[in-house]
Length: 124
Image (tube, rainbow, N blue to C red; front, side):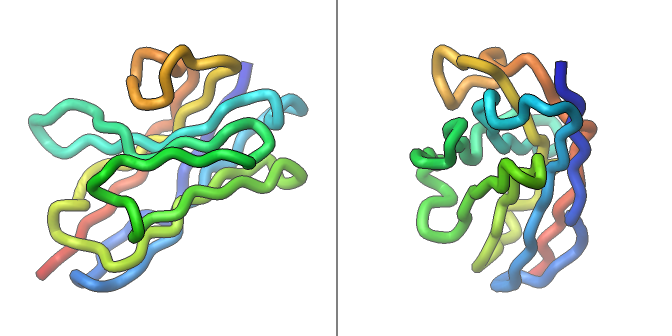
């Protein structure tokens, strides 16, 4: 099992940047595909980005391509989400997820482990 703890959320003006971090417990972090999803009030949990175990491949939702970057440091058991050019529609709770072998990268049901989430609010 793995436990995930997100941090780095907050309030930022449109056009600004934030970097989210997700720290994982355990010694097998490098065996997990990692992801970020987000959920706005009253909406479903939506895919944001995913990264393979070695970090060699990354995947993004169309809405964040070119603005967000997912990365990982297996030595630090941490995955990051660098968010630039933030927009009010990026406002949501951001969740970090993990799975050994998700069938797809973009469905929340494919990930077994989740953090508690961190709030990101983008103001005009």
